[in-house]
Image (cartoon, rainbow, N blue to C red):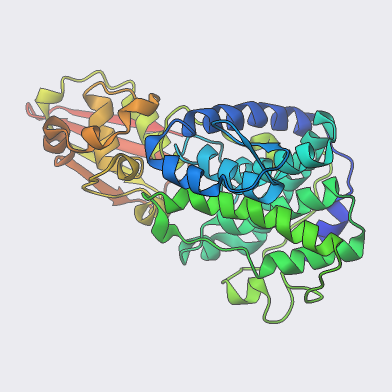
Length: 374
């Protein structure tokens, strides 16, 4: 059974309670991130520009909008801090693409919270399935899995809420294939969280358009000249979940920055070394992260969220990386941090997994400290 047929079948599947329980936790996590993200001053103009239509769906920061616009705003604001959940099977942030779509439609359709959670669980699991099918080459070439796989997950979640039949769901996926987009070049800018918002909006629109009778290619995802063929998909084998659901291994963040940095930050958290004594720091990480979160000299708070050197210096100098306010433009310009980050060397190590990091700290006395975390 191909990926498209699997997704269509999965859209009406029974949801495992363990999976739904994890989705409830991610719903809380997503809401907290969105409430905090709405307070970011730099996104105020973006949010204000969308508040042009009325509707039943609430948005972070106050007010209501139509479902598609609310999904766009809430998806963007909930990813603004890069503090939301991650899944490493495909290196994506599933909740910020799926939940804004689901919650906006749920309010519009006046469905129960339990039904919304079921739809979101199906959507997140579907996004991970698509992400695995697209594979690491898709991500490595420069596509943002949160935006691409996430859009298909949001579409499946919306199809479930709208109770689309299998033909409508097929067309919704085909329509999504023309809209799913997002590149890693945006990391460290406001357009990175916008990728999540666009994916959420795509889910709403693709499903509603299919419900209204809009048609698309028979298999816009996996067919000839479809999304997969034109977006470097590996077409990896994917199976529908039975007992074990991928969502059950979702990761929630303890640091307000790219998840690629977290293993290093956890390793450094136990260092307890006087920064004045440090002669050099060598960070070893999986090669995947070298083009994702290795901005050597960040100049903004957003760029700091994608910098091994700067966040390592922050941790060693006692700046809490779990505090949202510490990722500011001022912290990016801190001279003490500049001095310490200049001593940090980041190297790729293929022997490490994507969730591991090794840190070697050399003191001026010649003493060496070795730290590791997974």
